[in-house]
Image 1 (cartoon, rainbow, N blue to C red):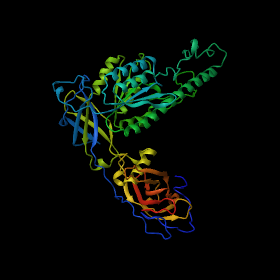
Image 2 (image 1 turned 180 degrees about the vertical axis):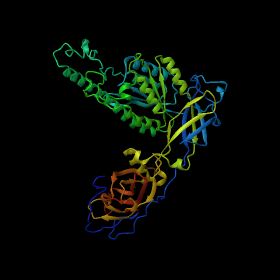
Image 3 (image 1 turned 120 degrees about the vertical axis):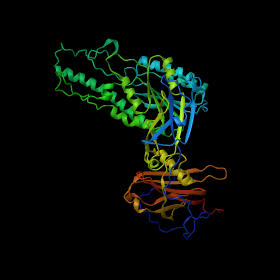
Image 4 (image 1 turned 45 degrees about the horizontal axis):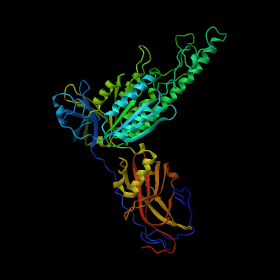
Length: 555
């Protein structure tokens, strides 16, 4: 805010107090009583909302099972059975052939799902990527119109980026999505791993080993060193792109967690080098004449980079499907094994094939019979942040797939900076009841003590709040928020005038907090301090009135 120094760390010595702020008055010569503050319901809040476990059901032939009943489902959360409080079933694809004589059982209307189509152009092959595009086009033809579609692309330059969406899966939305998918180009041979010195890797039939063959006069070690340098550079770039992909998946999973309603993620990829993924490369050339040499290609297994992001996907509430349309030579590298591992770790499914028609049918069957089982957490389960989820079906031949774990409650420390800022604004604007407006975080709120004074200053009135920090926060690092806003009223929306935030402020670095009342009319000044580890929070909300220009009267 113009002219305002918020979260001031220096002590400001005023020559004289020119007055306090009254709820409906202007500045005066004598400090009036402290302004009343909107109350905060202090103490710990307990979130007892019903938690939803989404899952899909198929029979042994991959056909959707649409008529499961609650008594046929055993739901275990955190290893313990829980009572199913709500149970809803949906038929996502009405034309899909359902299983058994009970297929005529009615299902609820199709829910609107958030569907993310992720195309991996970096780790791609020409044939596989082309089949991916044909498969996606075929699937979109019959996609339910109520879904929302988003196109995500992973490339070597931009990493993971959104290209389109969300768009409704109606005629116009499908047209846009198809056009965007058709424009995608695979980055063939952009990340090549040249394992053979005679491999053709350049234009016009140039050879990687040209000028470096055994009949040259170059020492053998020099040839090996040059070749190792080339391969080391290639593997370094390959590993860098893979690590960036893993990091981007983790950030994407955090975003998915905050998307409401059912979510589906389809990953179209040809996988990556299985040796580098599972084993890495220690650079030792055991069993060769170079056994005593260590080259520049040392790389730990890439799977180590993907474990946490894939687990975050499993916890996001989205149900992932990894689709591989490539074929591999017998006895050669098996990038498909990497996708199998990714699907298993993220609680998803793996589909492989070359026929778009067959793959489309199998994918439609796996995602047609959609269910939501609700339960109410209690005891230690309600206090946990995450819990393992298991679903058993008491009907022979039926299998289900669901998220491997469920987020029981949102953690403050896992929110983004913008989400934390929004949480602070919600609390200042609406009090404790408003803290769930944009996130599921439930802070343990307490009143923040302190004294408000006004400072001598030219122009707009300047206020200072001397905080009486609670003793238990002395050795803690707190996130501090200083918010000034105009409350909604008389048909007008509220407006955030200032919102400053500093994370990790230790006790010695906490000084008075200040703000400036510019303009005129009602204001709410709010101060929030949060302990990220314990989620204890202290709040002070002050109802004020900006005096406007000097000499003007106020009602």
